[in-house]
Image (cartoon, helix red, strand yellow):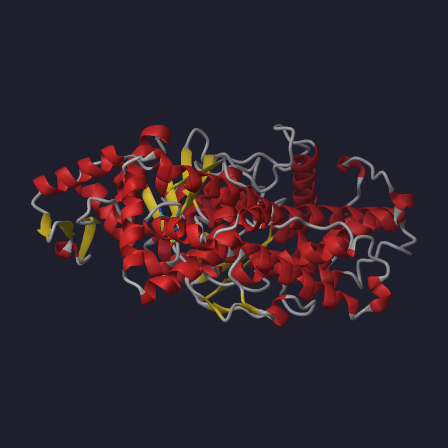
Length: 595
Ligand code: ARG
């Protein structure tokens, strides 16, 4: 990489080759450890934080627990300070030291770095923002996991969106990721559908839309069951035959399952989301389910209530839970216990994440606890990533129950929104595609904008508006950045980075604001890995979009007579586009080039 920065000592855990701000932080840490013995550079490094508005980095002196008052310590750091390639100024405010970076090297290094890692990456594919912290580690991420023949509700949509994000984040951090969709494809409801299908089923409807038809059959037969208790008995008997492996009871079910998966794949594909493997409750074997029961019995935790087996987790404030029904059929909880064990045997994961709504907090903690009680050393590698409710999700035709309906509604609301600006609308090449893509972006951004655990209210108008921090706004920002190359062909191809003079950018506060944001992107990815919060990435994307939008007026490319300036600005916008695009992709969004 073309770095002209002086060399610095290496601080463990940092990697200036993937995150250039690590170098600037190291320089600050070095200044601190040089002037405040016995503070080591490693200790000093941990105290270098991003500053508040307008401040690049801030250090809270008391956290080093050094003898002496903050004023005295500050004076030691500041005395005889000479601006260098890394640090421009140090200022002191009560317990804090504030550091401003050297604009010239900041702008040049950040842009060089992005350029190299995007177009000249050692791995051959764009890698700015990625790191290797997870190299050699394996993770299984289970998400989405809808129930066949029941509705794909917004809860599943959230799991899908957050799960896809986590897959991308772990991949960006070097982990070997396996994504699983654990379908609700087993249980008494399939007995119900089987009984219902004889009465209400139609092969034709099934072919047309399996998911919808099975749902309709389930709704109808459930209604019958309310009136006639025999229906449930019949259904339970049917499911028992399925559990016992009776082929005649299984063949229809197998076909329904396959057809439903096919439909799901189409919808996920529209969302830019895919799975390494479709598994499901039906695939969990009996062996470990029985063993779990035995082991817990040995621990004295099982009681028999009218033939049903209950596990007592009161000691851990997790209540009591059924592990097996009186007729011997398995249940959700037991399948999760055995399923986790089978997955460990298959993947030997270092970590496994379940992306499931917070309504199931108790269920997840129960089965994690049971695996722990059974003595599996890997039980503490399981993690539940939960999230709050979505309120008020309905389409104009009523409540949405299927994923494809939600996608269709988003596209059509977006399409109408776009038509309001007829002039602009006429210039769009493929309005169908654009409205679908932007509509989906709107859903995703609304979903990921706040902390996972917060509930939010589904609001079509708000999420699909071009105003405010919305998906359409983000797509628009990306499109506008992309258009810069198209609009300035006379400046292309740009010379190699070493021949672009960035000094004019270093003088612009707009440009350096953009540069430090761009430089912080690798940190944003690392934070997302720690917190499992997409909202940090969404916030970053909007901060970047805003910084760019305030720069347009002053950092013009078109019409700039000084060609060196024009080229440097164009380069800045190209780098900004690449990083905004990377952040959007991390959020599973497909950045558009035109709209
Ligand atoms: N199918 C379940 C539901 O819709 C979610 C499955 C969550 N994953 C798990 N391993 N339990 O409620």
